[in-house]
Length: 305
Image 1: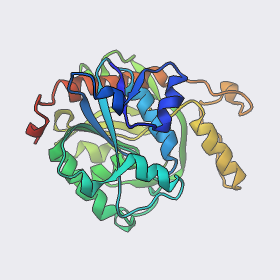
Image 2: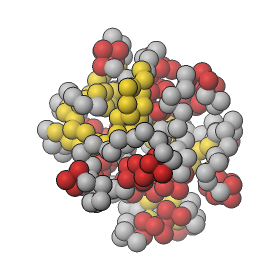
Image 3: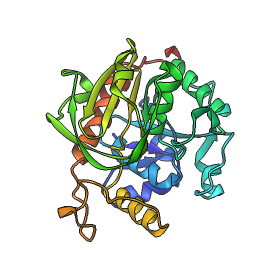
Image 4: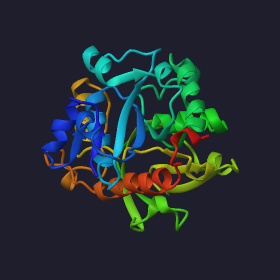
């Protein structure tokens, strides 16, 4: 089944070039099937890039998905054209009476600020609370994972001495869960962050399960409410050149940035990246959709609570 995306979303043409089957909402309306409703709260600065990365991964399933994009009323994106935001995104206030089978909340470039100093903290915590009763399963990614763990469970974040930047090896702590179906014993994930969550703080909370971690990059995934929430500190959705773009951007700004670890072939930034996380990323998103969204959501979406 294809993905049902808003008409004329830039990701449609970009992904068609990769032979990914997507259709716009006009064509989807003629198909006699209830698609799964997925809402994405995209807090990343480069909205179109993040949309494309997420849609690419969501396409790897036989399920039909109807994708919507949410935005914050209390924050205006400076890096995405106003026309794009008006065309494809809706304020939370306009969506709060709706229910969704799945939700993805992305990272945001505010991780070094105290949570309460973020100018949209009040609105986003309202959305977190709303999601817990209006969405079957939510993926919290990077800063959103830290913010969700802090808001719901009081888990603190800590500044790192240097940026966690590169591709890191991870292991699964809890075997047999559907979210890890098809995973190898070890898997790789991109990380790009200045703060961390610590395992001992996760383990103190009886309602949290630490699912996967890394000797080098620490906590990777925690779960709450049997999969109603997943908190993921890395960026499995990143495309091959995202870390390269970040690295060269920061070098261009004269920032003190180290080369991303385990990323370029032979650790030479003149070489192309060695992509080792794509298979895991596709499994992560397809397992989430198949087992925690599709199999758990009620046939009548209004029964979610």
